[in-house]
Image 1 (tube, rainbow, N blue to C red):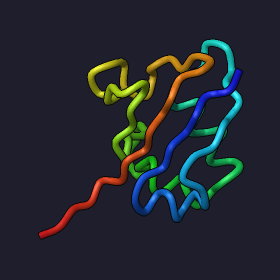
Image 2 (cartoon, helix red, strand yellow):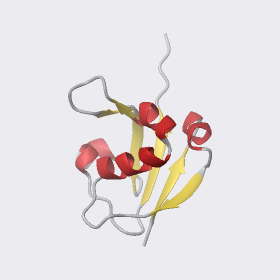
Image 3 (cartoon, rainbow, N blue to C red):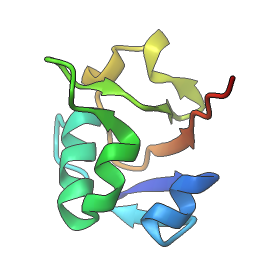
Image 4 (cartoon, rainbow, N blue to C red):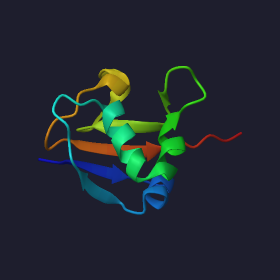
Length: 94
């Protein structure tokens, strides 16, 4: 069973869709999901992950079933069949 991905704000434009179903690997993590997703939509990678750091850090808020991944296991948060993952862009200003 796939997971449901939802994209808000500018991420909707980058992904080309507001929502999509995506296949889920058994025992996969949010990072595994982002890696697989960005192979199909490379323009999303820079919007979702900061690769200039040694370890990738989220560039967007990522919610798994309504909970932000920082209160779970971060990018190592497990993703299961039927989960809903929401990507929310972070906007900085000055």
